[in-house]
Length: 169
Length: 280
Image (cartoon, rainbow over all chains, first blue to last red; front, side, top):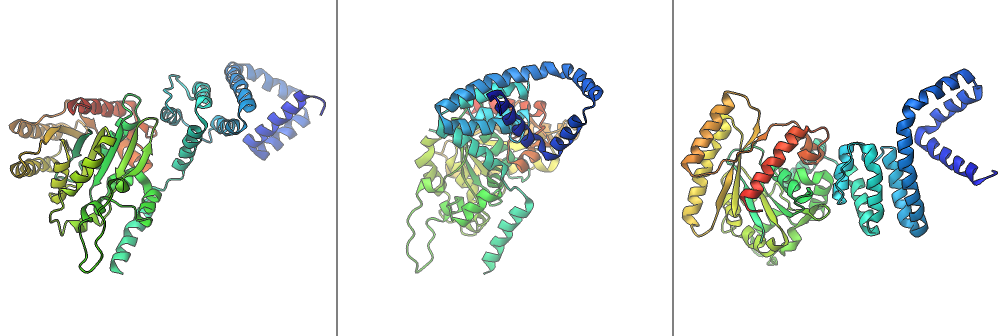
C-alpha cells in the first residue's frame, strides 16, 4: 500500500463489498478483468444521466463525512453509534421508507421539511449528532425493539388459551 | 388536572379501541401536541392493550404479574381466611407504553379476567376514580376505552370522566346503540347528579358515503342527538383499511405504511375538533 488514498480506496471497496455481497463483487471482478473496453466505454457513457444525482449524494455524504470525522475525533463511542446507524440508513436496512424516517425523526424532535428520503438523511444525521449520547442510544434502541414486535394471531391465541388452561388447573 | 374522556358506545365494533389508541397517539406524538397521555383499557377484551403493546410486552406483563385494571377493581376483594392484601399503589398499575420526544402514552392494561369482576361488582365502581384522582396531575389527557355492555365498568368510567365521546357507525344496527347509551347516562345522572359529566359529542366513525343507508342512519342519529341536546362532531372519520392495518402493525393511521394522506388528514382534523371541544 503506497498511500493513504489507496488505503481509503480499500476501505471504501470493503464497505461496498459488504453492501453488495460477494456474488456481485465476483461478477464485477470477472467483468473488469475480461477488459472489454467497448462495454466499459458504453457503461461510462450511461453514467452522466445518473451523475447529477450522484453528485448531489456525494456532496451530501461529504458534508456528513466531515461532521462524522469531527465527531470521531471528539467522541469515539458516539461516532461509532451514529456511523453504524448512518450506514444502515444509506443501505435502507433501517427506516427504509420516507414515512418511517420522518416519523422517527419526529420522535427525535426533528420535523423534516424535505421532499424525499434521500434529502432527509443529511439534516437527520446532523440532528442526531447534536443529541446527548444517552438520548441517542435510547432512541436507536427503541427503533430496534420495534422491529422485534410480535403481533400475530398465533401469539395472542397462546396468551388467551394458556389462560384458559391455567383456569382449568 | 387532566382532561378525562371515556370513549363509549353500548354497541360493539364501532371502533372505540381503534379510536382510543389513535387519539392517544395523536396527542402524544404529533409535533403540535406532545401531551402526556394515559390510556385506560376498561374492556375485558383488552383490544387497546393488544393494539398498543403487542404480544411480547403483554406477555411480560402477565408473566411478571404486573398489575392491570383487574387488580384495581379487585384490590379490596379478599379470600376468607387469607392475609389481607395491601392496597394497590397507583404507580404500580401504570405501564409506560410509548415514549416520544416530550409526549408519552402510559397504559393501564386490561386482561380477560376483568370479566370475572362483572360477576361480583359490589362497591367497586369508585375504585378507578380514586386511583385516577391520585395520578391525574401527571397527565394532560386521560382516555378510557370502555367495554360495550352496561355494567359497573360503565359506572366506573362515568365516575372517572369529565367527558364522554361516542363513536357511531352510520349503519342501522350500530345506531341502535345510541338510545341504550342515552338510557345508561340518564340512569347514572339520576344516581350521581353531583358528578359533572358532559357529552363531548357523537362522532361518525368508519363512514364510507354509502348513500342512502348511511344518510338514513346519520339522520336518525342526528335526530336523537338533537332530542337530547347532544353535540354531533362536524368532522367524520371515514373508513380506511389503514386502521386495521395500523392495529396489526402497532401504529396509528398516520404512521401506517401506505395510508393515504386524505384519510390521515381526516382523522387529524377530527382530533383537532375534539381537542377544541374538550378544551385541551
